[in-house]
Length: 262
Ligand SMILES: Nc1ncnc2c1ncn2[C@@H]1O[C@H](COP(=O)(O)OP(=O)(O)O)[C@@H](O)[C@H]1O
Ligand SMILES: [Mg+2]
Image (cartoon, helix red, strand yellow):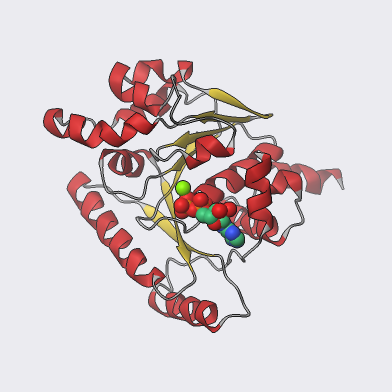
């Protein structure tokens, strides 16, 4: 199982969209994919028809009952090969609860360890807050995507996220590979062009060569409760995420099979 997390302390930058779209492409390639909604707002849960106010089986249970219960929490999404562990609004209280007891930084990785054989990929949608859930996600993942909206204020948010990352990584004495992912790029606006240029100048080593364009079909996809790639694989946004994925898994099995078949 490969574990990827998607995180940025700024909201509305495309984290949830990144998780849903990458997960959808992986599932349509025959991979077994598990998404984890770590954001108490539960956007990913709502995306796939759940309700974070009513979740009786969620990430919250992992913290209450221990990582052993992970496999009882997995929900179907209606899409083959694509499963989800819901968020619950109560997760917003975890920092207060755990703050006192401490030692809860590995709950997610231990939960995923229970599911290691059942999935090829786990994708974690992080909350926009540095707290126990984000610390868990950073400890559990082997690669981090940081979506950054290509607009004026985005760079500040990115700096904050990178500071957080450095802090957590230092405290845990670990290393973590990450990719900065420019999102919502609108080539008709100067703000987009300028901020992309400055991202590329400042973060040359870690920025993705591929950019996610503004695509209104993402909203249609979330309303339909399906990843964009499954509604319209040739939508600009879906194609862009496919490039990102191919960057991550250059010799993907399904591509290799296709090459042999032709
Ligand atoms: N590339 C994009 N183009 C247009 N709209 C987008 C794009 N990515 C995300 N959105 C929309 O922007 C809003 C916020 O995205 P979301 O993924 O929920 O951000 P976050 O999880 O970082 O808060 C959603 O309505 C989503 O459909
Ligand atoms: Mg979100």
